[in-house]
Picture 1 (cartoon, rainbow, N blue to C red):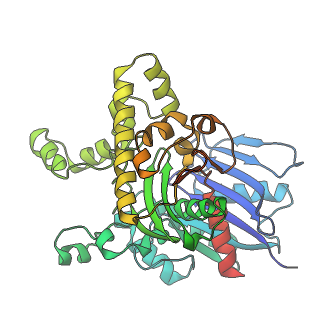
Picture 2 (tube, helix red, strand yellow):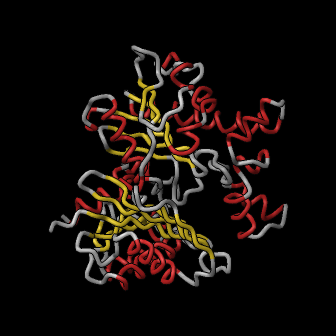
Picture 3 (cartoon, one colour):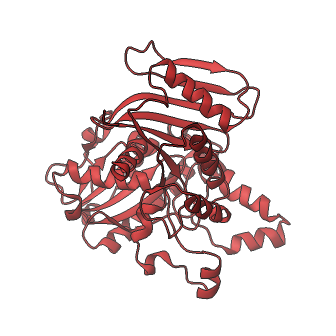
Length: 400
């Protein structure tokens, strides 16, 4: 029997998201989430395959990631999809930071784990949880290939002119300071799916991808290769996000330390957790912001305008970097669903060949689609992202 299934694990500091996929047809056999790991109010939500009896939920203490993955294994076994199945080919793990060394999916070895651990200082919130998930999965299935798929890998093709910061080179190299970029699996999937929507090979298409969720990033993709992206050393740089500031004068941090007496940790929390949309208007849900705008709320309007202004700036910059743009693709929660954001982001850009058709833009659909006017010089697309499928594909291609 040929093994065709891949289990995808996305391990966070207190959560595990998982999907089991059959790579013969990319179908989902099971989807689930374990959240609030380590708390008395832990919760597991599991959706089995069609005909499996509907969504199951259980609550109660789940002490750690080891207990969480054992609970996941129990749920899968209940559906006849246990981790001991000979049909399981590999387990694919989302790993946020792979630095410069990992530019492709990689089978996990002790050496690979050690390198991921060495990158913890530049991804302190994410890599430790990713490592925990890998080690726990290894203990459950030591015979099975564990594959790390890195958020940063897609962006390793950026030229040095895009990846380097203009600081002392020796200092930068000593401390691994450069632009790495994130959301790479999403940018890879969406850029390729956009090319397919246009009926072209990815090598023939230049795309600006706008991944707009609570975290947000942009990328310029030339012929299937990333040449620029908005996030940097960390996911803080770039677009305005739900709770992150995005681009900011670095001297603001010195000013807050000297004048406001804030500590490094306090400034870190301010810029990552209390800024962006929530810092501007108290909400990071674009639906709520739009509702407030319609009621005349000026703070909500300001937050929306700042969000869109930053988007426009990046679209224009990446147009210049690419020279020729075949498509702009919106994806992730805001990008896929916020009609006003898409319309405003491309307003008054007809001179660049960019426009949205009001009727097409208003259509609600879970399918990839074009929303630009017929005959537009540059296609505008809405492409639902599928990071789990991308991780599964990369994992399966590596091990088979």
